[in-house]
Length: 374
Image 1: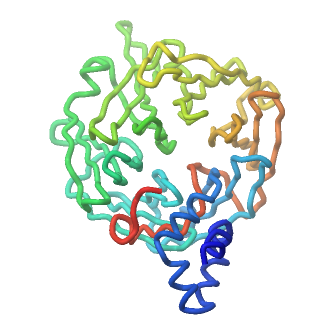
Image 2 (image 1 turned 180 degrees about the vertical axis):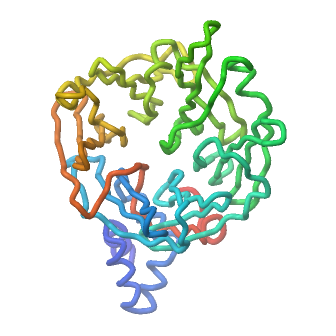
Image 3 (image 1 turned 135 degrees about the vertical axis):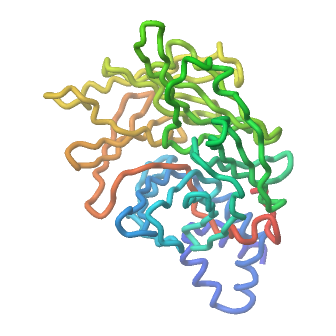
């Protein structure tokens, strides 16, 4: 039986494993067992899910799965239908094959591979949401947590909330004047966070925060800062990026286990910066430079690279190239400078991205009969 378990745990096709549950009662019990699900999960290779939520066909979702391991591969686009039909659905973040999906104040955990959904308790207070919901694992408590932040209309102060999958409830976190006290009450005219899914590094969630700085002369300059959430201590913090980064910071990533940042200016050069010592602002170091001269339109000199999608296992960068509705995925090898391009077919659109692994983990059973630790 142990040999059979080992062989089946290495089968990558979830569809095949689901069908094999019908072979007999023994196989159904075996393939549904939490021990086997954890064993199977550990053998699955991570990937980047490049997805698009169809705003015109409510509840429909399409995605391309791109392997981050060598050799690079891309699977045929998959079509999914979320159980809820709403034009406001948004994939917020992911963890181990479970997507965190929001519909206004309603939050769901969804495994699109096995098509199981878990609706979380509704937020009792939700006003002007300021950042995508974060979703991460706290190993100290063996708990998955969903994190939200919004601005209260009553006093314009910020308030957060964290949901514990193990305890099954939302906990309110007072944030107060964190933003104005750090950036200055008269300096911020406008503030919002980007649409990129938050990145988890070293037990912290990370978002980029965009704001306008008004000078004494009345002119405004856009800057970026970093919002973090400590999954263990359950606290928010706002950190100012170094001067050479806050003007052109574009997206966070996880490169070789370190917090990394892709910066893009108007000089056709993209830079990869890495925080060598986590939590030490002075340790931000420029690690790579990418010459994007070939990815500018010759007439308008506008950058065709619209989105950073993620890092590969061996230090490659996955980007999206959008030009006049023609879409490509581009792998750039940071070490060799080699570029690979994949054209997206007409049935798929390049939208957002998140880390992903095909999984048999049930969001319904998580925290109950199925242990969280994977």
